[in-house]
Each structure stands twice: as C-alpha cells, then as structure tokens.
Amino acid sequence: MISLRRSGLLAVTLPSLLLLAACGSDQSADQTTTTTASAPADSASTKSVAMPTSASFGKTTDGTEVQLFTLTNANGVKASITNYGGTLTSLLVPDKDGKMGDVILGFDNVSGYQSPEFVKAGPYFGALIGRYGNRIKGGKFTLEGKAYTLAKNNGPNSLHGGLKGFDKVVWQAEPGSSADGQSLKLTYVSKDGEEGYPGTLTVAVVYTLTADNALKIDYTATTDKATVVNLTNHAYFNLNHGAGKDVLNHEVTLPADRYTVVDATLIPTGELKPVKGTPFDFTTPHAIGERIGQVPGGYDHNWVLNTATGEHAAATVYDPATGRTLEVTTDQPGIQFYTGNFLDGTLKGKGGTVYGKHAGFCLETQHFPDSPNQPKFPSTELKPGETYHSVSTYKFGVRK
Ligand code: BGC
Image 1: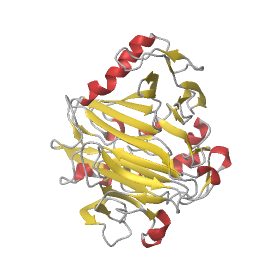
Image 2 (image 1 turned 90 degrees about the vertical axis):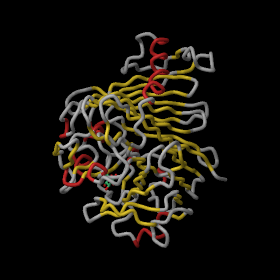
Image 3 (image 1 turned 120 degrees about the vertical axis):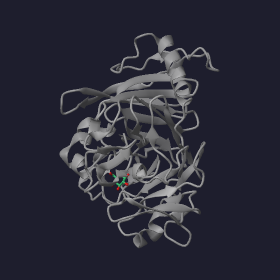
C-alpha cells in the first residue's frame, strides 16, 4: 500500500502538541492580532518566533465567521489560508527583480468561494480536497465485499469528495510557529457515511511556510472503518497573476514517462500510456501552450510520476515573464496537471481579475483517479489502526 504509513502521525503532531503546550490556551482560531510564542522546547532555535496573523474572512452563508490566517517568513513571503475549505487564498512571492506578487487564483472573502456561480462552476480554487481527490467512476466502489454509493456531482461520476467535500466545510484552525516556520494546523472530522463514504475519518492538514520560500502541506488521516482516502490541494497557480494573462507561456516539466489514459468522462481506462512522442511529454520543459491545441479540451490528466514513494520531484514550472519558478515535490505516485480548461471568464477574482480559460494551472499531487475501482493502481484504502500520511511541497524561486 503506497504512502499509507502507520508512523506518520506522531511525526506530524508532536511539534504542534508541544507548541500548544508552550503557548497555553490563547491560540484560539479567532485571534485577530499578531502574537509571539516561544519556540517548542525541542526546536533548534530558542528565540521567540512570531505567530501567523489572523483576521476575519467574513461569514459563511449559514452565519459562521471564518478566519484568514497569514503565514510570513523572513523574506516577506506570505501565504494566506482560510479555515473555510482549508483554502489557500493567496501566496505572495518575489519575482526576478524582488517584486512581490500573488501567484494564486482566488477571492477576497468567503462570499466569493460560496457564490452560486463559483459553486456551480466547481473550480475548487485553492481548496483542500477530500475525502477522495478527483473522480470515482459512477460514484461507486466496493470495499471488503461491501458496495458503496457516493454523491455524484460530475455527470455520472463523483468528483473531489462529492456535493459537500472538504472544500466546503469549516475546519478547526490552530496557528503555530516553530523553527520550521509559521504554520496552520487544520482539523476536520468527516462522519461515517458523509457523501456516501464509510468510516469516521479524522483529518489533520498542516500548512507550513518555510524559510526557503516553500509551502509544505502535510496531511494525516485515521479511520474507524475501512475507507478510501486521497487528499490534495487544488491551488490554481499563475506565476504572473497580477498581469491578468493566461498561463500558456509558463514552461512545465513533469518527471513522468506515462500518464493515465481517460474516457470521455475523464475516468481512467486503466491504461498507463507512454508520453514519448505525444503532447503529454513534459519530461523536458515545454510551454503549456506549445501543444495544448493537440489535446482536446486541454490538459486535465494524471501523470504517473517516475518515482512513486519517498519524497520526489513532481513538477517544475518557470514563467519567463517574471522569472518566477515553482518546484513541486511529493510522496504521492501521481499528479493531476489541469490547465483551467473550464474557466470561461464568468468568475471575477481578487482585485477584479477576470478568470478566463487557462487563467491558472493546478498541480494536484495524488493517487490516481478512480483507484478504488482499479485494482492495478496503487491502493487508496485506509484501515482502522493505520495512518494515512502524505507531504507535498510547493517551493518558489527565481531564474534571472
Ligand atoms: C479535475 C478537472 C476539474 C477541476 C475542477 C481537476 O482536478 O481533473 O476535471 O474540472 O479539478 O473541478
């Protein structure tokens, strides 16, 4: 079973437990000012580290006040995350001249993420995706001899957890700070039967902004009944977001010799096809727009990463206009490279930016779509007593 490890939970939660012990009870989710906290006793550093800031992000349609937490590092890089959907709403990183710019598609407040147009279009900007990232064929699977029926929300299939996936729930938030950088721990308990999935799933996701301009996302989950889990983040990147242009000039590298072939409803057929000689070959850098016309609909596929376990490279992106680079690493076997094909200009985001076709791209680290129905794909099963643990990192730099 790939990347479902029993030992992961302790490694993830210990620093935050120590931090909570060190900080006492004043780390509530609704703090509104910058506070400082002592670094955990076991960290290399003994000096005080600033905590993430938090501010209101507005009220959800059912009247719950949600927060926007901003993690900052010494280089002035800032990552903002709301506990509504665990959504990454903005990420300010330098360009080749040191000018900071936001590289994430999103909205200024929670209403944007709950607007009927956004929910209907379903682009999942920046959100945490679960319980199962990407599609499950016919919204059905069988586990330990029992058939389960899921909420269908994408034609005949179930996509990104169903009608109310982890992107549409309010998470418990605990800001933190350690020698690794400022962090935000989000927790959510998904009930047995939620969206049709078996087992109570207890999920923790920790976002950490590191000193080397990386946003690390650490996922853990445990269950009380056998279930399936495939967690990811659905950020849309545009390394030149402020310019209001599409991403077709961005150059992408994917260390993957094969991809999963899909049917007309984007469900894998089971075939892992070599990319060589096709527009899916990103083993060397190619501009997104160079061959996208040869792929009906645009890129929306799962690449089979050449390395499946342990921390490995998953993608590299370079924007020649700003010099910004993005390097993605993961411990997952696949990555969904999606080029915002369904964006059509009806959504207006931060600062009035119109999000047209290819306004952003997603690099969703994951197990392969529809794995519960594909016995030959790496397993996404999680049993009681096991801990799902996965880490993906999005690191920013510049090329001059
Ligand atoms: C899927 C796309 C979908 C997008 C937004 C991606 O992960 O592969 O087909 O349109 O998410 O929902």
